[in-house]
Amino acid sequence: MSALFQINDLAVSFPGRDQTVYAVNGLSLAVEAGEWLGVVGESGSGKSVSLLASLQLLSATSRIDRGQVWFDGRDLLRLKRRPLREILGRQIGVIFQNLANGLDPSMRVGQQVMEPMLAHAICTKPEARRRALDLLTELGLSDPERQFERYPFELSGGMRQRAMMAVALAAEPALLIADEPTTALDTTVQLQVLSVLQEACRRRQMTVIMVTHDLGVATNVCDRVVVMYGGQVMENAEIDTFIQASVHPYTQGLKGSMIPLNGTHAPIQAIEGSAEIFHQVPRGCPFVARCPVAFERCHTERPRLLSLADGHEAACHRVEEATARVG
Ligand SMILES: Nc1ncnc2c1ncn2[C@@H]1O[C@H](COP(=O)(O)OP(=O)(O)OP(=O)(O)O)[C@@H](O)[C@H]1O
Ligand code: SF4
Ligand SMILES: [Mg+2]
Picture 1 (cartoon, rainbow, N blue to C red):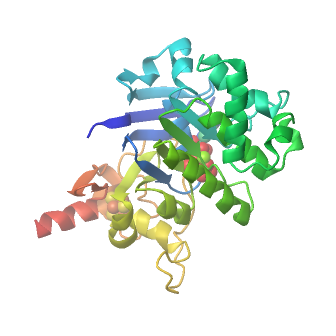
Picture 2: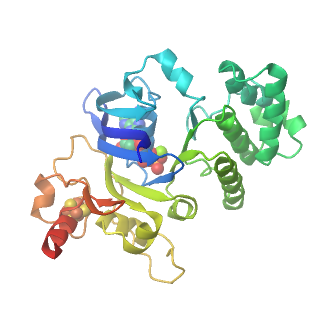
């Protein structure tokens, strides 16, 4: 099967007056049509920067140092503004938590949901209105006629999030990229919103890339998970493998920091420290300073993403050496 969306060897930095931040350092990932891919990792591991950069949505202070982002036979990083705008919203829907809050404060909610349909000439205005109301209803906004006429500030956080999802789904895109779509909400509202989003996307057989720092969310809704650190992929595994047979020390640390996935009461073993800010491209493994099983090679040689089994990859010298011994 060929990938619907594929990032190849992406590197992104933020040049500063005194020093540069190397946020993404050779990231590659792909999502197949119909698949739900979770992207997980601690705060600062490069999840948002990678995805924003891949859609050319990062601020001008950033620099894309290398890479390609393939979608529908085209490299999105090489597209000019206009063809890119035709793809964004129409073929790729985005929900980014921090992208100016996603909604225009000066425009009524209903108009904003209609906008992608009208901008991409998908239907007439009355039809767009009907579809927008249907979508608001489907996403669980009570009294949709009333919400349609309101401004974003008049809605609660949960309702705003649902409205934002309606905008992202309005043009029926093939791919949805959602960056922490429910993180700002209370836990109970989070689950409700996630569940309506899940149903709406499944109904449309959409492909989804969902960034989350919540491994519970990733394991509940995704088919596969990519674990990121230092702007690189540490491990890539299907959900069952991720839960039962992950091998990367960083993945183990992340899992150890959360309430056990299998309902047991093992003590929480958080990873020491927090994600680093890299002012140089990491020469070896980006996790080396925090890894409990690091050894000499980890400081000098970047581990390659090694295929361990069908659909399971990890970038770690320990794993590579253990695999070589077994093999
Ligand atoms: N505008 C910027 N200027 C300089 N550095 C930046 C900028 N935006 C992001 N970074 C740096 O890029 C790195 C990756 O940040 P990113 O926002 O992608 O993390 P994240 O994995 O999405 O974290 P979170 O879970 O908190 O959303 C971090 O070290 C961050 O400090
Ligand atoms: S490559 Fe080395 S530092 Fe990196 S995760 Fe593996 S053992 Fe740890
Ligand atoms: Mg982020």
